[in-house]
Length: 155
Image (cartoon, rainbow, N blue to C red; front, side):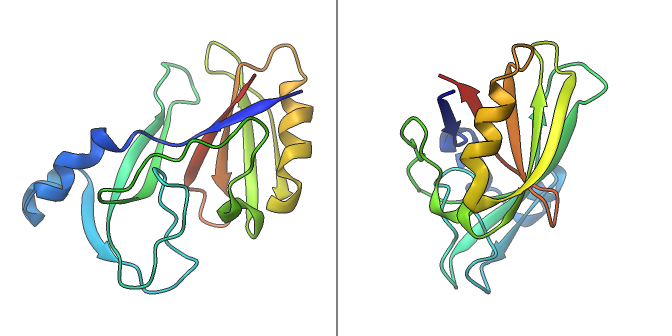
């Protein structure tokens, strides 16, 4: 079963980088500086920020469907980076050395199944979950902090 991992579109976050601190707070966001690598994974570029990079940390509604599983969580965004466009069946390198949580949903936003995996085995998990007819899409999360990482769809 082929899959496609999708990063977030950066343009939607561009205004945040121009906001003063108090206005950012009103958007449940704050500026921060990467102090370690890895540790600050950008959801637009799907690359870990370099030490010293400036980011915005914000609460992002990643599961916006009106269902019991509606959800948001903290994500990092780097300014001015290009949106990652992984190839079909490609797993970005930043997932390879993390423990991941995979949450599979149906078209109504109801969770069908969920699991954990070592990032080195993400393909196996995505293929297995997307092989279930009821699964419409999968949200990948960083298991340790629970943050949303990316979406995977059947191709």
